[in-house]
Length: 340
Image (cartoon, rainbow, N blue to C red):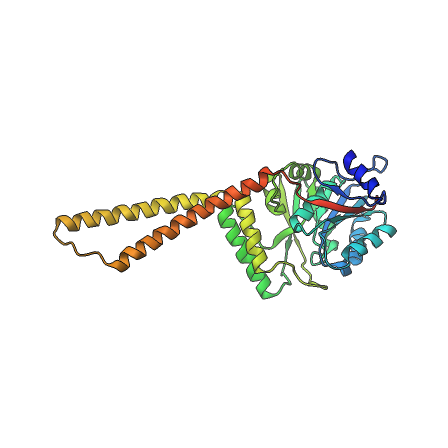
């Protein structure tokens, strides 16, 4: 932390906006400022036009419930999102901004936000206003009933058909390969107690998927039906290719089921080979042998070769994941911060 501060002075950076690496340093805090009851963590990407309306609606929804802060994490958005966050933080003391050095991904941005959140209860929501802030008091009311996690269950999703279909397919496939039940109507929108947030912050893995990490903690959870609004500005940054890449990353990081499936496949192939060998021996002693055809031999070689290469490839993906994790690189890199 001291070295990072020296570098910032050397570069002539403003004392309120400094570059730093997320490694072992503590989140932004000021011992003079009391911690709020609520922190609202918002990853921001290509949502410059939503920054001000989101903050206004969030503060209006939480003002009657207790003190709050909004932590907006700009995931190196190519639009004017960071400028909008800086302008908002200059006029609203309860807004803090974090700019990541490059696009690390939505769930890494969430990790940055929850590590800097100071509230006893932490809301997590997207910046696109499809999850209305007006439903936040309902989540808080359920949390007061003794739940550590309260998730918003979206009713009548307003996304287009392709988005809903790919999302449902993604979660079904993900649930099968991670042995976890996923509900496509539940995303990041929810409220989480400090003990849940601290547990997630203590997880050292480089790959991040916030809903699965919350599920793993095992704390008492509940769901509350919430409205789902249409996207007013922009579009989703997740296409089919990104969903497949995200799913593969999650599976390799949170489950060993592909390896177990490879082992089962090996047993099945071995059983088939034993049966074929038994049939061949039986036909030999029955004088019912024929000259083996070239096509069947080549097909068998290509089939087994492909299966072996696939199996080695699966193992190689896990080895690659281990290689990335043992580097112990930071989960994200903060370029600038704004706000108190």
